[in-house]
Length: 290
Image 1 (cartoon, rainbow, N blue to C red):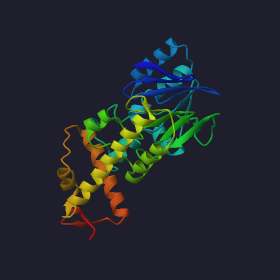
Image 2: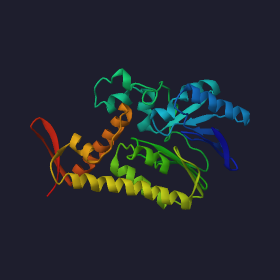
Image 3: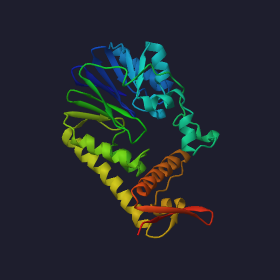
Image 4: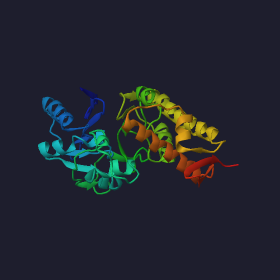
């Protein structure tokens, strides 16, 4: 973990999940909390060594790698926690994430790792209930149901609004809850003016650097959409689609996340009347519209 100053009053703890630290009119605001209590302890140590005593913690969204350390940090510093109203219910009831990823079924124990299931923590304010001078909350829903980003002056924190080249290379398909919103919010970020932008997973990017990476993210989504439409010139089940995309992962969590993203894309294509579906021979099958 590395503590880096971006400009006066704006810092980032660079790690596998980046943690912005922002001076506001109400006190120091942290954004996100790492994956577990151990990460929370490391964040605490870095803040204390820098002489920083935070007052607020914004949780950008409910995924475990962003909220796992929140309970420890809240109790240690006496923080007030903030999230969007959409994310609040999942943060306070973290078992909902493995349940929805299991399509409503009781999740298997092997699925309930720290990457999926966090400790519950209470949200004190939603983003509609608290305001900070010179700081704007950004609606970046798409990757998650109500993800929040932040803009302060020339700095933007993008959460999982886009991913670094390294993440895209590793996983091939980024996770998203709502395909169309995810793509639209990337275009929104690309159109913004800023000096520096930090996603949750990546580095500190200038506007020029970020535009290229965001465009790569959009290209991957567009390619995925076109590949699925090409595959569906012939009728296929979900298994046939994932096989056709040649996305091979052995890990149950990564497999489930990718399957969920493919399902999100299919639902988007159905809503746009580009794909039709039917239950046939005991299987849900999809086909490109004529």
